[in-house]
Structures are given as C-alpha cells and as structure tokens.
Length: 230
Image (cartoon, rainbow, N blue to C red; front, side, top):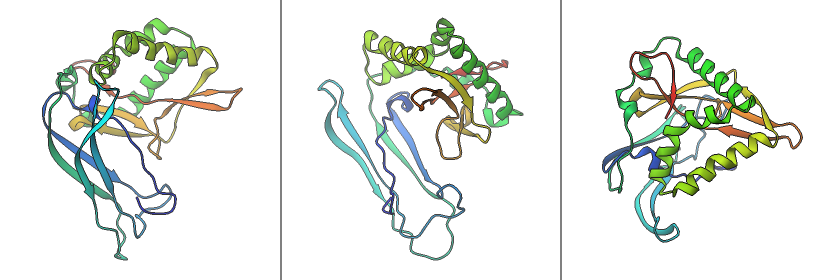
C-alpha cells in the first residue's frame, strides 16, 4: 500500500497449492484497526514470483503482477479485494484429507470449540509433552516439507528449534479473547486470528519479553469432535 507506514510482506504460498492446475488467489485489504473504512490514496499491489528451489532459491520469474487504482473517491470503502485464477505447475501432490472433513462454516459454536482446542494445545506444550505435540503437527509438517522441498533433516530441525524455544523460556501462553474465526479452503479449514490478523495463540518469554506465535489451521474429520492441525 502506498500510504505512510505502508505494509508489505513476502510469504511462500507453496503449502496452499495442493497440486498442479488452476489456483484461486484471493487477497483482501481491510481498514486499519479501529477504523471502518479504507483511507484515500490506498492501493493494492502484489506479485507472484517463482524461485528455483534447486538453485539455492534464486529468483526465476514473475508469474503475475497486479496493481489496483488508488482510492480517490470520498465514499467510504470498507474492503479492497482481488481474486485471480492462475495455472501453476508443482512437482508434488499434497495430502488433501481436509477435503473430506466437515464444512466448518456449518459447525455450531465453532469459535468456542476452536478456543478449547487451542487451550489444549497450549497446555500440552506448557507441560512439555513434546511427543504429543510432534504427533499433532505431523500432517502440517509433512505438507511443509513436501511443498517447501525440505530434506528429512531440515524438517526435523524445524520442530527441534521450535521445541528448544519452548524449553528456553517461551512457556507462558495465551489465546486472544477477541479472536475471530478465519476460514480458508472453501470453509474446510479454520483458524483463530487476532483482530490485527496475527495468530491467536501466543507464547511469551517473561525474561526477554519476547513473543512466539503459532500460526496454525485446523480441519474437522467427518463424524468427529476433535479438530486436527493441517
């Protein structure tokens, strides 16, 4: 966005691409926290870039570029959104068991149920039940390792570093009380997010005053009451 204090980020999207084919990409800009409309002169720009995983992640090409017109009118605009469909080729097929799960937009009291799941996960980590924690992350880590082309050792090191953080002071957790349910994958996945978009589950290091946030998504298998990390 081209406004004072503009926001920009670069994030991988491989883990959201299950297999080769058309991919729907949706990007939404909401008002700054505490406001109900987008400011004038704001515009949305984004690029979809390709990097060569076999050449130390060197830049390869720009697959897509979009730039919206600046907001000039005085009429309040509560949301700025762009949806695009692109054909993408990837050398893998991810596990799509979440597709057979419940449609979460139809689940009653889903916010309370997800909050309970987050609290259970936080307690498992706080009690240093790391074998249970690794088992809960198994599906997610398989997806990340496959889509980000990680070796077995690199994948294992990701979990080891995370557990080491928990063991070295990040052992006080909280779930944001005002968190909202954010759906993805056509309502088959869900997560709790703070109103500023950050993950709802936060671990704090009291000594260093640092925070570690776990950004997780969940699905609900058919005829089950237990959410699974995906």
